[in-house]
Image 1 (tube, rainbow, N blue to C red):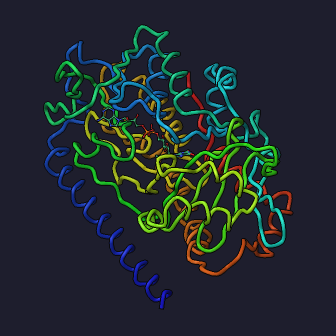
Image 2: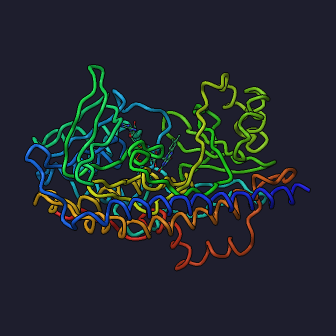
Image 3: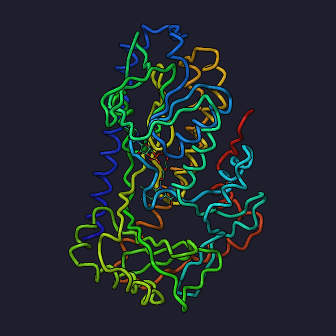
Amino acid sequence: MSHCGWNRRAWFCRQGARHNYLRARVKIHRWQRFKFTRLPLRLPTVKDEARGCCIVGGGPAGAMLALLLARRRVRVTLLEMHHDFDREFRGDTVHPSTLEILDQIGLAERVHELRNSKISGPTLQTTRGPFTPFDLRRLKTKYPYILMVHQKDLLALLTEEAKKYPYFQLLMGANVTDLIREDGAVRGVRYQTDDGVHELRALLTVGADGRFSRVRHLAGIDPVRTSPPMDVLWFRLPHLNEDIDAPGGAFGGFARGHIVGGFDRRDYWQAAFVIAKGSYPSLRAEGIEGLRRHIVQIEPRLAKHVESLADWQQVSLLSVESSCCLQWYLPGLLLIGDAAHAMSPVGGLGINYAIQDAVVAANLLTVPILDGYVTIDHLKAVQRKRQWPVRIIQALQTQLQKRVIATALRAEEQQGLSIPWFVRAFTRIPLLRDIPPRIMALGVVRVRVKN
Ligand SMILES: Cc1cc2nc3c(=O)[nH]c(=O)nc-3n(C[C@H](O)[C@H](O)[C@H](O)COP(=O)(O)OP(=O)(O)OC[C@H]3O[C@@H](n4cnc5c(N)ncnc54)[C@H](O)[C@@H]3O)c2cc1C
């Protein structure tokens, strides 16, 4: 019965995704018919004060792009709606691909000076004992680990570095509310601060304002959404004298339709509890003791740790989303990072893919911006270069979600995780076993900063 229900749900999800896809295509098609056909390939010349770039959103994508452009003497303004970067449980997983990029721009040492911990691979509790699916220490890179750094510290580092360049301006507490459009192109933004509404003109506007992007909405671009089967609860658990043994810095396991995992953050465990999509209200109805009970059913060694969970306020809900826009640009406007493609948390790739978008955008757009014109072809090139790695990773994440996570979340009675023999065999074959972690850690293609 429940299997039938699941199939029906899956069918509705597929229909929903197809409907979103068609709606997005129709919108873009309309825009192209009415706007693009009337546009010259080269955008109209702009006044001097409107040269340069304005970036909406001081997340990893926006902060990195602003720094890379400022380093190359592009006049750039970064607008962030919050007054600080301080938000709990954002993407803190800095992968080797990002560490290599930071190394290229001379920031790798400084990022290692931030309070951090290192993850080289998870230890999963299975019915046949501990199992390590991969070990990043085997990868050929200067940084064979995931560096766990608070995103606020990373953003502060990037923006502090950008402030060294006279071409950079950071506006905090600047909430972008509208796009300025002239001659069929986006020419900057209107934003609200404590002292009123302001206008900022720019040759290129970049929407790096995250998965609920206002810029994307104002531009009339709809992302095509897929339906990940899960949501994630994040919370802290203390380190105790009798602690979990996780040599690679991370642990995980599942039972009775839930998954629990955690990263060693030096001062505490950053723990995740994965639940079936939409099941948060029923879990909450069980009370916080219900959550504690579920965690201990999966990982009895956390019995003492969970006593610290006293209130739902200690728990953050991440409603998992995965989406990708069919078109990342309009004349004078580009979307990057989560605004162009929200990534599922599987593999902790969101922040790293956002930063790779920023690097590619800076590589391809610096010269056009400095020259004073950015064509549709320049913007199209950014999407072309970034879209296929994003699509490959999203397809892999979808497979993992469908075949592993959804199955685990459906299991009602199953006690513990059982790894199929062929997966165990695969992880013992030296040449093959490093391919998945390599793709996850270094990306489908290695992205480099061009100077
Ligand atoms: C709870 C949670 C946990 C996560 N865990 C991980 C993880 O472990 N690993 C991982 O890789 N990824 C994780 N992610 C995803 C990761 O944070 C994102 O993929 C990544 O931050 C995307 O970067 P971005 O710069 O594109 O967007 P964001 O980081 O979302 O930044 C967008 C910025 O734009 C600002 N903004 C929004 N609207 C406006 C506006 N109108 N005007 C001005 N500014 C605006 C926002 O305040 C924000 O600072 C997590 C996300 C969440 C929500």
